[in-house]
Image 1: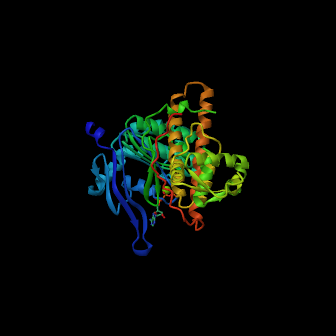
Image 2: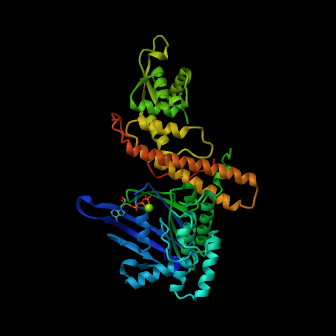
Image 3: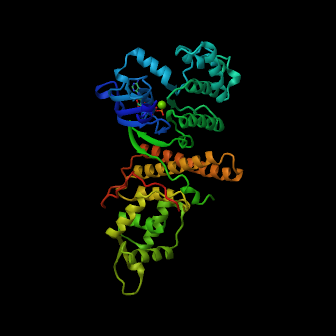
Length: 245
Length: 196
Ligand SMILES: Nc1ncnc2c1ncn2[C@@H]1O[C@H](COP(=O)(O)OP(=O)(O)OP(=O)(O)O)[C@@H](O)[C@H]1O
Ligand SMILES: [Mg+2]
């Protein structure tokens, strides 16, 4: 555990992703570098098509870079076998997809407990964890429902519960509040923030400044490159002296 | 801010008469900020005193009306500083940001996108600070929380507006402003928010 404290949980090094080739090539990401340490939450903002989802998919090992490296807890994803990668994703990475991506044949509770069971947690314990995670996001009442019988916001919260369940060290969330009302969205952000405060590393894509503001750092993408970064703010109280009127 | 910086931005485009500056100012900012001609001449007088503009023309009848004003190198430095310094969220005069963007659009050689980005970063930083304060104030006074929410929503609205400006700019790439003047450099690196 000590080594994990010093090595950033996620390191992206000079990452590029090109779709297609020749004249029709789309440069979704151009030489992007970023690290996220334990305890840190980084928000990614940028216009539609700027490469945010691409960045997250590469960080989570769901897509392969054209060049550059992705390291999770110091291990390079490109050097892993498919089995190792699948295990890492299940055990260490919590991923919230932009389109939720719940398994349609499983109930909410099963969707959440499945990754834990695959990882060797006994079924009963996995179910208990799942119910707790569903309670955390306020959707206990849909635990036994299938995805097609849930609202968009409920599906999104189940997807968040699935990503947060268990001791995941890296949380990757793509617009996790897109289908939620402002209050529920904020509750979800609090949850992600708390997980990071407890030692996880988080990378959060959002269009909403109010949600990005929960992060320690906000980075801005444009055309696949990082154009700015709010850095870390240390002067927490400085604005208190400004006028609140 | 100031009328001061608005006038400098206009003079950066070309030398002008004082009364001409007033109409240009209003044309650029719409009705957001009506000026009277007296304010314009008072401000020009201060700018001249500070070495930011130089006046040329017939002074014989003691009439400023005959003078044309031009920006000086010192004036350019001040203008550059204005454009590259984000408007602080603490104690912001109303509408300065909108006016700054309007001026950035008409002043030659200003990278408006960079002005937008520098502001967005600064405003987001303020938003981060408000959010931290809010987590700490959670069990505290409701009135304070409401004030924080007001600050948060106002900052959020500003960021959304800046996003919107950026999208508009991208759609509407300006062929309009061709620079005879040297470009005003705008750094996207911005300073940390300062207290007061
Ligand atoms: N499979 C693909 N083939 C070709 N181009 C792709 C593919 N996937 C993504 N792209 C392109 O890569 C760019 C970045 O896409 P990405 O999904 O990362 O954007 P985004 O920032 O997440 O946008 P949004 O805010 O709309 O979700 C876009 O121009 C997109 O069209
Ligand atoms: Mg996306």
